[in-house]
Length: 308
Image: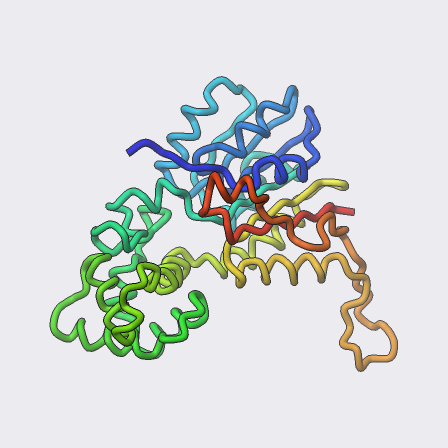
């Protein structure tokens, strides 16, 4: 399958990076290289580091960016951005971009097991060498843990009933495929709701987040990204889930605030000083034109911060 993916909020995020021709930049989630190509086109003596933990994506990016000599490719998790840059001998950079969305290629490639619209073995690993996959979670996690994951990461209100059905079904035989899991989720709802094709979406999203440790990686990564920015360097993060956006929003808010003492304390004792300023006090969202061309961008939010 061809690696098709439409980069979300591309113009807004490239503008937000405020790219200098001689600057050093990092695309933490290179994917199909849509954002990366726009960065590379604006560099002369600068350098672009393209990171992705999906080898398929990185292979495509190398081909699409082969005309640019300024690009270095790294197969790794962006949560390790500090180690990656240290190994490359780079102390600080002038801009970092992270698009946290799952690529259309990953969703549409059946054997990757991301989509309930295509039958395949339960997988959902962005890094195909990772040990934990969706099959293990669905067939080994406890009922309570499954319900917690679905409620926390998917905001699935029917999580208890779905978890109960999963555990009951796997006592008969392992749940092996996306369609098997989809059917369990749908059957957990009253008949009047079962015709809704989007019913399994929240469950699949929640399991994908757990498989790839996405929330924990993001919390660690935001701190590391900010620490690796030069003065006036920009960090642009595109989120697609309320929990992701909350992590970025709260981290940016803390770093942009001088005193973070609890309100009950009459005078500052934390000595905390703001080290960024918010370029976007409210997130940038897709325009109507972008939504018409790419419905998968609907939940996207872009937040931008600048290092002081």
